[in-house]
Image 1 (cartoon, rainbow, N blue to C red):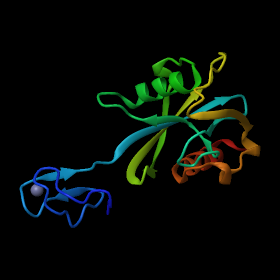
Image 2: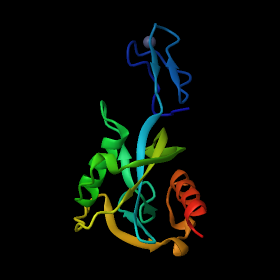
Image 3: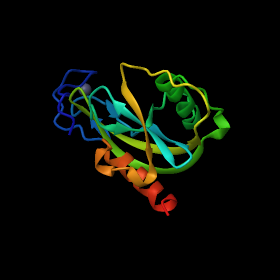
Image 4: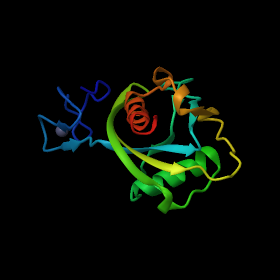
Length: 172
Ligand SMILES: [Zn+2]
């Protein structure tokens, strides 16, 4: 149930229920779908290390995160990976260098409104370029060796699971 939506945006009648899929007005014909949002997360690797960002804003401020974000309208997931890394880290990675890994469902609450996302994880090799941080969203970056990664320091359940899967395949 999404609590912030109390009235039909078409006729103003009270809405008794708005679950994560569908709001149907009991008074007029309005039916509105809140679909699952696509988002990407990129495992950036170099040697035996992965690059984590430290979140500088809620939700999960101060926790480890992977570079990534929500897919824009009319955008491919690979382009989302490329764009988010350009925005967050100031680095350009060729679009064909993002390899799909797996996906995980996630909950993302922003300003009191819960969103359901499907986080698409990709893997890319980190190029030898200098990082220029987007400081509003990211406090810092950390390179962490696979054997030293502590899953509990990762903010989102979905990304913790993505990294856990990656470690199971790659940590020998
Ligand atoms: Zn209505």
